[in-house]
Image 1 (spheres, rainbow, N blue to C red):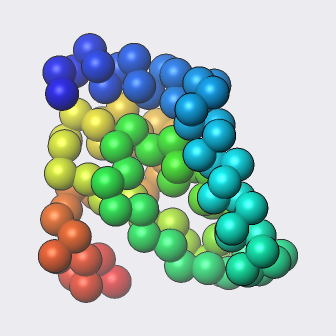
Image 2 (image 1 turned 90 degrees about the vertical axis):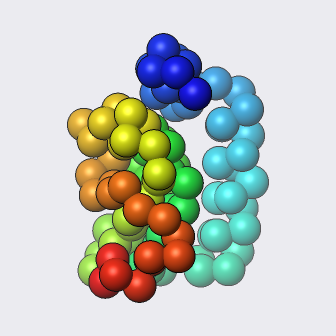
Image 3 (image 1 turned 30 degrees about the vertical axis):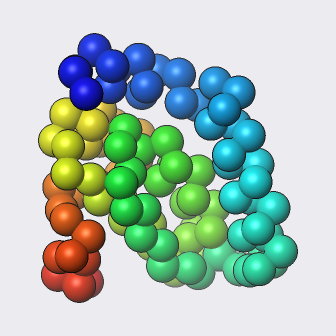
Length: 98
């Protein structure tokens, strides 16, 4: 993708209906599976501009951790201000993120 496309994604992924719907589905599954647990360790592979990393933090607020990885450096630059720990990595290298 071009930088302009990543910028649009970063600006709209928190309010666009599609992203909201997908997060609502994820919320239903995660809440049913993990209840009120807030100590999860979550890897968001393909984190892009970080919208889901921010969303998933609610499940890691008490001793857990959310890490986003993506191959695209431009997306990670846009994620940095609000998503916290995101890194340029390939999923095959995930064990190195410990």
